[in-house]
Length: 246
Length: 246
DNA sequence: CTGCCGCATCGACCCGGGTCAAACGCACGA
DNA sequence: TCGTGCGTTTGACCCGGGTCGATGCGGCAG
Image: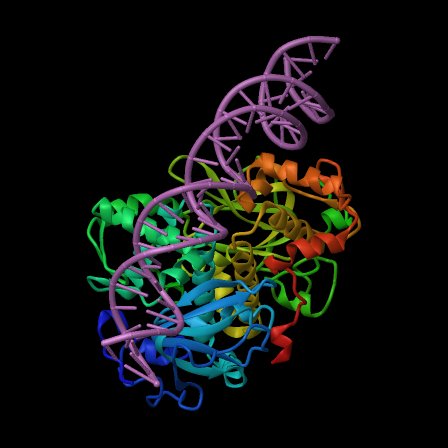
């Protein structure tokens, strides 16, 4: 189970729970490199089909940081329907939305072979008190996640949602061709579209020559057309670093 | 411009930027009571129709905490359509979703006569470094806002959305009869429903004898029916305090 | 009082996208 | 090699709720 560093399955150099590592730049060696965080963050592999990182309703024990792969957070309503609340990509922190309530708001499983760093709250909390930078980064992450959720919560057409999603994934995953880690079913569930609609819309994009679709491997041809369509969603912005501005 | 402390227009005892005040319990006197925060948080009145607290795209200068009234955050798309991203009620912090980007993600105006505390970032940031509790509370607030946005981002029917909204507003505003601070137009915009649909649905609730609707003054009769309807949205949870669990 | 304006209300119509059913393609294990 | 199963694709149908237009209803200024 080795991970190569291709754009489609890269190992993130950014790790919320390894802020020192982050600040020092890419050491490449992982979380525990003479920073004093050795006991804090341990590595863990998560596979699709194997168990969940945590379940909805669990009391929050740890925060996680994605280093490779892709995970999804979902809830199950009374009728048994799954509802995907978000995807986590390399660099994302997992569990932030649980901090307000103290309980996990969703179940998190991998949709692709993934690696995460685990930061037990028992150790994270006292560390936060000594390391204000960590707290700042956590607020930033939560804030970004909030902005993302707010953007996608609008009532946009299937076209707009999907265009915004493709551009977002491309920005996050980088590289030329876009290999989506999750199924169209999951995409539709996340974007509140039927699987059929996702499929039809992708086909329609292809017919307009905006993308060249394989099933999960998508090459974006006319990025500008997608951007024009997705503009109302307002998902993409430049990154500024709040902590460094301080 | 005096504020009475009725449930419909109460002054919140909780203030994000006055954490010491919050921890000591209700001192009632406002933000600046011998806590060392006198210079940090100043009070400010905001009225509907008068200017905005901040505009979308502004660089973030201050965080705000609502003490009374109601404000809304909105963006305007290319076609000039307003899109309400959230309401802020007493106890809420304003500006958290801007921290990730460093720029305001929305324009914020009052929809009812309101009072806010203003916490300039210049003073808030260094304070965060000395006051870890403040950082923790900010994460909690952001996290709660995130959970709210995620809950409402599902694809629910008009019935479900409105029921969840009524119950949420009632929980937040407290008291017996519910006086909604915002117009039905704003509610519809926020919930992604046409104004007509909001109106029709409220009427339908009234016909089923679940609520007794005046235009903005609503008495909830059959709370259980609403809860049953709104259950899938999963908006209401008990509050646990992450900081105190540490 | 009267006109105006913004909000709420009501009815008629229509469309985007959900639902259902069926077929297809591919990966994987026996 | 053949199933078996999951994900994708396609077509036909339908409905919740958006849209449009008109009317009602205070609140406020002149």
